[in-house]
Image 1 (tube, one colour):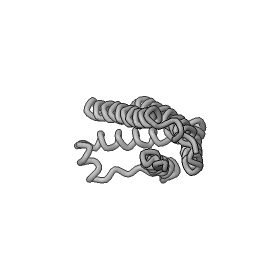
Image 2: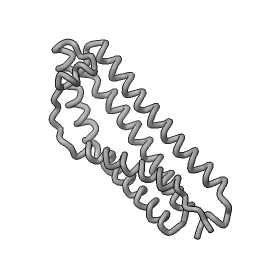
Image 3: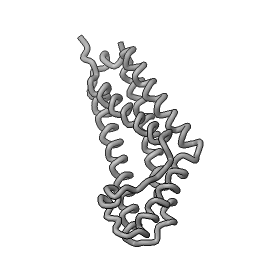
Length: 170
């Protein structure tokens, strides 16, 4: 009896949730409002810092929503996740794994696009404190995205390599 590849279901479910959150942020409202709580959590102490951060977010939203390539890449990610589910339902683990690997590659490309968008939107920032905060957070987000992608790829490759040959396809 073949075991179900639970790891694939878990990874696909996590990626589906992430993709849905990305879609929600892409199609969400574009109005930016900095509350006192947000300002306090970001340590924005002056009115200039608050206004610069608001201008930065408005410019960032335009940068993230602008390129049609970003939207197409997001749709490709959703499609690859659907293909992964389809092949998983057909018990074709190899094709499901390859589809999921493609999704991970597209995820890394989107993470790079987000990083560059953050960097290019920083032109409205004049205070060193806020510039450092945004540079560090964008770099940490990119590093975290790459680490998560590498962990997912590692799991997929390990499981694919150590799976019995007869168990790879139904």
